[in-house]
Length: 133
Image 1 (cartoon, rainbow, N blue to C red):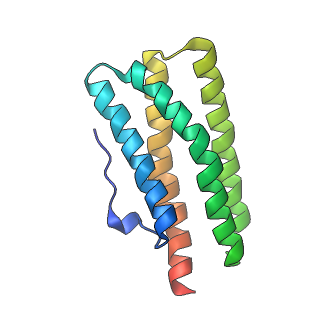
Image 2 (cartoon, rainbow, N blue to C red):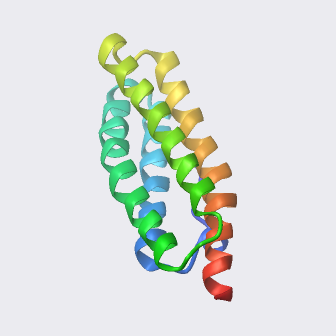
């Protein structure tokens, strides 16, 4: 079950939108690997990608929000921090237990939830704020 980037998810800032598209691509790569029974091999790449992504992308979004005095900055930042904590737990589990089938499902679910809930709602609200400013 692939997830597709849709232009209605764009917030109107090319760098942020490109980073979101990259996240969609990595999730689709994991789905494709799972369909070929190679999810265990691919999930390590997803963990590595997310490690870089949460630092770079969240930093970029937060600076953008501060620059434009985004009124929901504190709440948005808190959601980022929660995701980082959840990611750290996933990474620790991966390092301890390796890429089990259940772990691959857990990573898929976490990232899909993020795509739907955060990008589709929270980041979209940021985009609307920036467009109306």
